[in-house]
Image 1 (cartoon, one colour):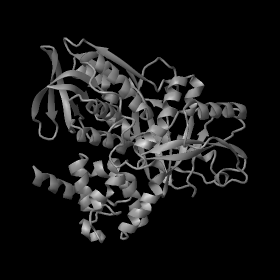
Image 2 (cartoon, helix red, strand yellow; image 1 turned 60 degrees about the horizontal axis):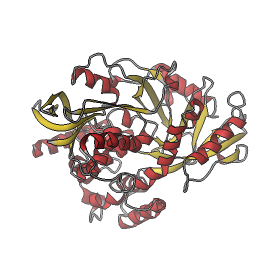
Image 3 (cartoon, helix red, strand yellow; image 1 turned 180 degrees about the vertical axis):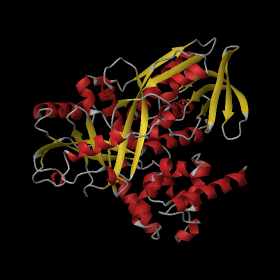
Image 4 (cartoon, one colour; image 1 turned 135 degrees about the horizontal axis):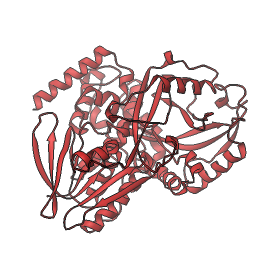
Length: 499
């Protein structure tokens, strides 16, 4: 009998599992695919307050988000890093005084301590102005943070498992019924088809875009209509500039979008906002979205961005709580929690909406409902303990990277940076006493070795090449089809031997 069963292995589900098990509850989490395979790996990859949410008067959400930036940075300084954002003033759109007011609030709402404040830029002399068209002469620069979103999910799951939670991927919850004051939950292993039952005192439905579908198919609530599915798409192109700052641009339709340095050699541009109908697993960028992002970037950059320049795209569906907003970009990014039942019959907590930045706050709110139903076991703790690999001070990343290069001089600069960014203090668990790259086994390309693959399979629930190349890393941008096929064959062989 578990205290809590969680449906969904995205950021909210894994964050709740980590928080709950750390307070002393027994936890089982089931994810029907790979961890972070839905919305949580298709974000713009920012830990940010949401500057544009101020326009919609969502001050509490912005304040919570701003407060979380340095908390998450301290928890995971390997996968979270500070980033400066350049906002050019566009004379035909929001006036400079409004931007200045918004950024003043942004600087002072969230208890900023280490992140530097906003400053005004002369784009005619600052290097941030060099890639931009000459018409942009004035701008503002402010702070937010970047995060590897999929790894944030996986590390929450790993920490939950380290503390005693049972994490099951490729496992679907096919049925849940109340029985003698608790839930009987039927789990189906989607690799073998085998089914088994578990019991739990409380259920959390954190299925993201599938939350209404779970209510219908698993609980028989076929009329559930709680979330508005909004598609957000991004494009990746060869890098458009050499400095390490990002841009936030205003578009003429009132939206904003970002251009962000990505994986050393690329620029990430996005996102779009459009209502989506259909299976969230089948979402894909449309030709109109690609053209929209290219044209929007072309309004600002001297170098025009063409559809032919795109090397990769990704799309995700955000499960926003349906608040009746007329436009997709106006729908709230805040989360809504609704509970059903009672402790005597079995409680169900449903999660609608939310955003990556506030996942830990959402988990804390869920924990209050869990404590009310099951009784309190332990204090709030999740923001004071590092995620796996993140047990070092936030300002010491550069020193750690240099030490890694000295200990493993056979790693090229790009591979050393990637490994330190992905694994932090756990890098040596993978590299061990290796004196040469060959000591780590077969190299599948771009510095991905057998040692790392085996670690990801045994410790991070990786099953397929896609799990590794597009969620545990972004090495899919660098490996050839032949290299991907070789990795897939190797992983299948390892899995068959372990079966």
